[in-house]
Each structure stands twice: as C-alpha cells, then as structure tokens.
Image (cartoon, rainbow, N blue to C red; front, side):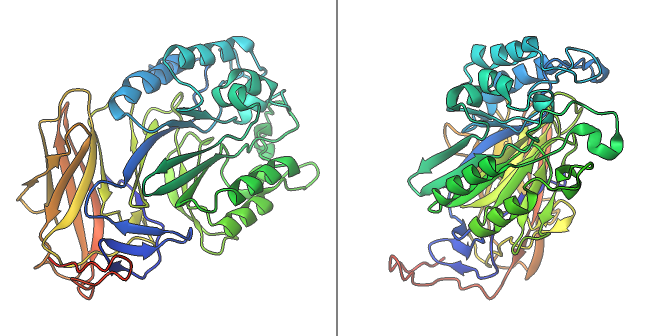
Length: 431
C-alpha cells in the first residue's frame, strides 16, 4: 500500500533487552519485544464546517461527525488533533468572507454533543479561521482548545510508565486578519506568520519539555517559505526563527494541513538534522486519505492515511518502515538475525476481525498473528535466523469488513549481537 513509517534514529543499533538506537530528538527509539510501549492517535485537518461539499458526495458536517463518533469509537485513540481550517468562513458560498458565527456554532455543537473536550481533542486555527479576524476571537470563543485555554497554541503531554511525550500545536496563520484574495501570486491572501509572542510561547513550551521522549509539532501551513512572505513588503514572518527552535530542541515531526493533499518526506532545509514532514489531506474536502492514524511504538513513529468509512485500517508498528513515502528513511533501525523478531500491527474495524497474518518477502506462506486481548494490537514473530542480510518486505493482512494488507520494508544486519549484557540491568539476553 506504500504506507510510510518513521523512526527518528541514528545508525548505532544494539540489542540490549530490546534493539535500540539513539534518536535525534535526544532519546532512544527501540525495537521492543512486546507492545508495552505502544500508543496511537488520530490526525484530521481542514474540516471546513460551513462549506458546500456536495461535489464529493459527502458533507463536511457528516465527515467531522463520523470522525468523532464511529472513528473515535473504533480506533480508540489517545486523542484527535485537528490542524486547522476548522470552519470555511463562506457560509456555504464560494468566497471566504466570514467569519460566520453559525459555522462556529455548528462546529462546536458537533464536538460537544459527541463528548469531545479539551482532554481528548486538540484543535488549532487555519487561514480560513483567521480571515477578517486577526485576533482569532472566533477561534478563542468557539474552538475546544480556544475556549479551554484562551490561547491559539495548544500544548499537551501524555505520561506513561516508560516516559513522557510532548505535543504542541503551532498557530501558523498570519496575525493581520487579511481577507481572502483572488491573487494567486499572493497565495490568495492566506499568509502564514509567527509573531514574537507566538515564538516566545513556542520556545518556552519546548524548553519546559526537554525531558520528553519525543516532541511532535502540528500546524496548519507547510514550511515552504513563500507562505511566510508578505509580497507587498518582502518581509518574512517567523519561519526562520521557528526552524531555529526546531533545531535547538530537536523535535521529531511536523504535521500540517492546508493543501488538501497527503504527502510525507524528510525536511532538512535550514535544519541540521531534519524533521519528519507530513501533510494531512482534508477531512472535509478530500475524497481520499481523509484522516491519518499515527502510532508511537518504542519511540518509532508509524502512520497510515485512511478513508472515511473504509475498514479495516491496518498499520504495522514494528519493525518500522525504512521508507518515507518514495524516499529512504535515514533513521530506520536495522534488526538482527534472530528466531523471534517481533512483528506488531494495529487493526481497526467495527466488527470483530476474524484473522490477521503476516508474510515475508511475498512468500506464499502466511503465518497467524495473535490478538492482545481487549486491544486492536496483533502480534507475531519472524524466525529470521536463515534470512539473508539486507532489505526484506513484511506484509500484514487482516480479514475483517474487507481484506486489507499493509506492508513495510525492514533491513537485517547480520553483525548485530545475538546476546549482550545490558550495562543498566545486567541481564544476559539470548535466543
């Protein structure tokens, strides 16, 4: 399926109670023997409540309602992130000339009536939410996070027995409340911008979470510089300073919306080490890849884009994929020639899934995986003792509402030690 995976790792890999490697965010990512360090969440964007969306035979209200009802119940994520353009600002028309309170009332009603709150739903503004509203008063008064915090940049953490994880939503729309423009050379007036107050908050928030295992950033706009330039003055608005903060605090991923397209790659322009860079399509206006599920498994990141109402959703979380879209993942770890290399996958489906299996290198033999009771986690083990060094493809197929297969590429390193004494716990590991 071409699903992308990411583990923010350097090349050094050791088997020390689990296969591990130094993450560029300053922590370790590791190939853990079981699913004890796995969690996941949903990402949506560009919900555009108030838009006339009949062209793709869905309505924006139905799509958001589905995301926070059926998808929320089936996927059971830690939380949902919405990266902006919460409303359309058109009142069902063509030109975004709002804001319109009726759109915000609809947005707020959908979320509050389905149990979304400031502890499980993290929304941030997009350019449609900022047109003619430079102070983002409508966002502050009607969004989940705006009402809860009074701010435009939500920050939150998740604490587990194995560490803390930090998440930050960045307010990328410009702060001038400029109206929509018909000028394509002016990006239709949807300028991005980060002012000194916003940048100061970002820096302070990152500094307060340096103990986090990983820091994941979200925003509405891409990093492309032309979004951050006022074509009348030639002035840039905070992009270089934001990239400097990413360099300084070594965040692992930046996820954004705005374009209504899905893509992913590794962004390293003006960044020393680079950052995983993932564009989420539109829940409201795209007809495929309408939302994304992201998982953290031993600090390795995996994700799968999915379509509304299409089940099951299948995502391999261990090992992590060596590919970022069509590009090589420079931080994917290698695995040893062992008889019990773990294979883990998440499978989400409203009815019970009848069978999940894995196969290696396109082989005809499919091996059964076992479900961890009460969870959507499926586990198997690959005997790689006779496998050749180099790349191998792992596929996982799930029979549920339909038959769906996910696949990743991993790499066997025959020089990895089969057993080593951990200097931390003094435990001798063996096959």
